[in-house]
Length: 302
Image (cartoon, rainbow, N blue to C red; front, side):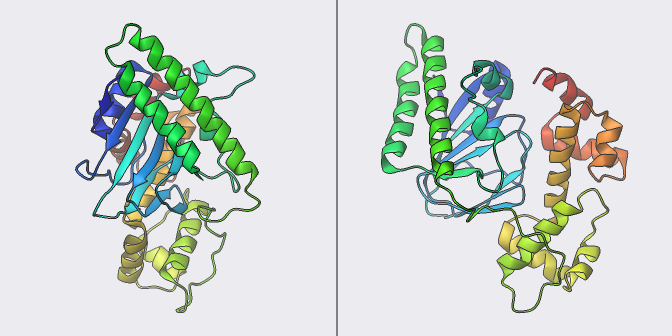
């Protein structure tokens, strides 16, 4: 199969074929701002990169780390090593992956089991890293072969089986969450001796607990005993994105889940914290690429 050199083209191909696509990316493919896909994403770090923000979880990551992100989770590479940033990104249609699962084998598990212990990331061993790249090379070797579609499908199923087994194995070894744990539940004031990471952890926690309420920069600043300019600066320095962009992305994430669960567009709008229907339509369409109504139509049966 074709290995794309652009994440955008890979996602487009995944949507068009309703299956999956693989991209091998370098520095010249500019990382997206905080975003939400309608596809699952497997993100494998070969080199470079320092910090991932997925929903309300920070992850510091290293070569050999692999992330599993579902279609409802906003994410953003908040810090990068500018010298080099090589990675493999696999985009997967959720319905396609579910269709390949059986009663005995749930290939969807690594995208649906995120909790305090099972986060979005596992760190592959050297042997597992070689195994992962073996499958990527097999995709390349399949291109142009007779029965390429069947070879790709078989390779994909073997790859996802391997990754789910690795996901379960690594998380069985985890006794308690470390990096990537949900931000602490706290509404306490942020004191001057707190680090910027601790400040932002508390801010993220507060936003996620109150996402359905009105959240303004002034209100957040007052709650955390910071000036409006200071809270914006600290948040941007630590996350790489703005407060308003994060809040909007989180609300769109909730809206997608509600719409997929059968809520009406109006119900989703009000339940995820938007107060203005017109702003919700614009924000949702800009983030997802289609209107809420079209999104419901496209995801029926997922």
